[in-house]
Amino acid sequence: MEELEKIEKLRARANVTYEEAKAALSEANGDILDAMILLEKEGKVNKPEQQVHSTEYTKDETYEVVPVKGAKNKDEKSAGKFKTYLKNGIDYLTNNHLSISHHNEPVIDLPLWTAVLMIIIGWWAVLILIAVSLFFDWNYRFYGKNDLSGANNVVDKAKEAAEQVKEGFHEE
Image (cartoon, rainbow, N blue to C red; front, side, top):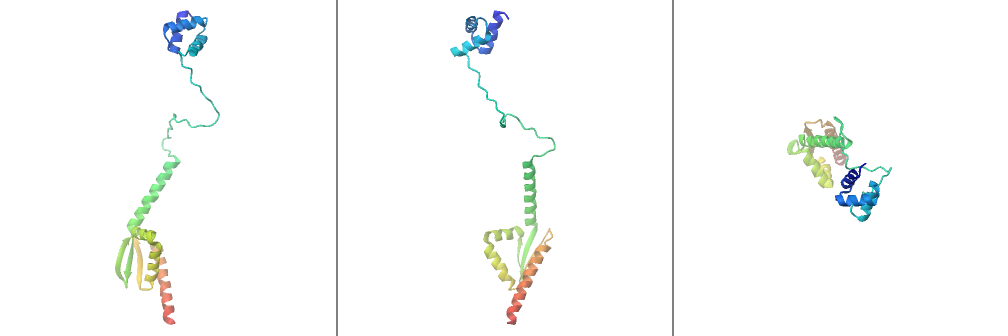
C-alpha cells in the first residue's frame, strides 16, 4: 500500500488531520496499527469501547419481538379470557333479578348486581334479615334471562325449613 493511501486510511479511521496522520505514520515506520496506537496514547483518538462477552443469558432490548401471525401470547389469551368472564358476569348480574314479596304481594324487585353488592357490603345484616324474614311469610324469587331454578330451589328449601321450625314452635 502506498504512503498516501495509508495516510488517508488512518485519517478516516482516527478522524485526525492530514499532518497528524502523516507524523504518526512516519513515527510508526509506516505501520497503520502502530500509528493508531500512537495517536491513542497522545489522546488524539478515542480508545475503542470495551466489549464484554458472556455465556450468561441476557435479554437484549434492541431486538424486536415479531409475533407469529394468528398466534397470541399467553398474556393476551389470559386477558381475553378475563374480559370474557367479566362481560359474562356483568351480563348475568344485570339481566337477572331478585324479587321479594310479602304474603304474595311484590315489595321489592332488584337487579341481581344490587343484591350481590348489598351482601358484599353488609353480609351479616343481610343474612340475618333473610333468615328472620323467612319466618314472617316473606318470599324470595330469582328470575331473568338465565336459568335460576337452582337458586330458587335453595330458597324454597330454606322457606320449608323455616316453616317446619315455625310448626315446631306452634305444637309446643
